[in-house]
Image (cartoon, rainbow, N blue to C red; front, side, top):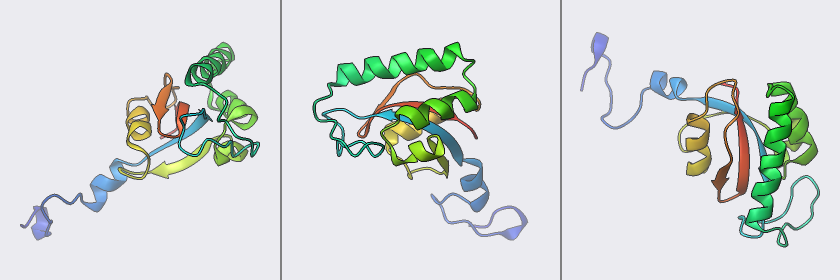
Length: 137
């Protein structure tokens, strides 16, 4: 059907403008555990198969407390992601860059969307493990 200015749009397909507006960006700190998809730390190369979900969540909450105690800034978040994240993005301070709908695991995408830009999420559980997310865009 024809839209404004006679441009044609396919029903059900987002326009380029709406895809751009739905882009998000974030840093994250991931702690994997025994039930994680591929339970191996990308930071250390070691298995996380002996880590329980409860222990992973407890450790993640301790990092959240440290980050909040130091002002919950992006720089502070980046520092702790470099020190502890089990994702390969640890080397970039947990920076995942920009992504759009469907590019990340559903739980992670929803956790990012629910977090205000410039803020840190509560713990988010995905198939990869427990995350803290710091939304940057």
